[in-house]
Length: 285
Image (tube, rainbow, N blue to C red; front, top):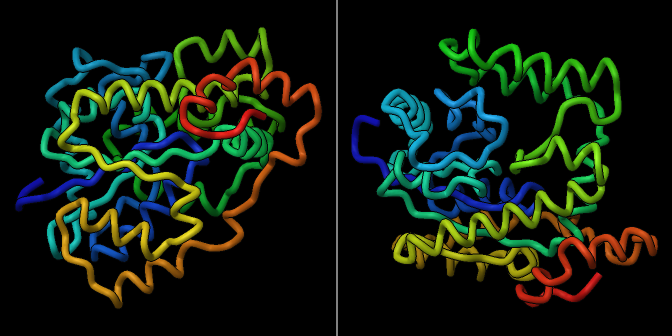
């Protein structure tokens, strides 16, 4: 990555507030940030893997070079760069091997709200403007190996066919089978469960490189939560930057799905993620 770079990797399940955290933390710390999830970069050299749960044996020298070079494009003037790709929840040791000096910020959100929000994303229409903006960041060298999958299988098919053609979010092991056998709602719950448990297990191996935060705390008191994160990252707190960052955490993000679930959805969530919710201190669905 050239000059000395201090990567901060946000780890969190899809729809857990990773984007809000990335953007607000970047402002609070004057860091640069990678503006989109870059799963296709992290998977370089492993494009044929059926899921995102890559292990350290899958790390190739060309993967290391591309990831470090790509992230290095976005480094801020202070050497900090923040990246968040939700698929990294399933491969923390893999990420740590590529960026051994990284600090990891693990964000966790109530799995009931995550599941409902993820379900809506699965059924949302394609966003052409978002795709075009993201495509500008796509590495040219990856077009022959990953371009067709990125541009056709996962995007065009969703627009053309509607519904849930392709998959959305982290691809945990067995996701394609689950889509057939248990359906999208259960898959959304399992995406959260796999993401949280895999991330926790991987981060436990890196105790001195991990900072943890709850999405609900960030919403309740953005300034105090961000200030605490900045201090835990070993950085000075700039009150002006912190104030601007706190204003980026919008009240709309407080959406809660708990009162909108039907009985079948509650029963399924209790079965799929009830134990993990309890372990993390969240109420049963």
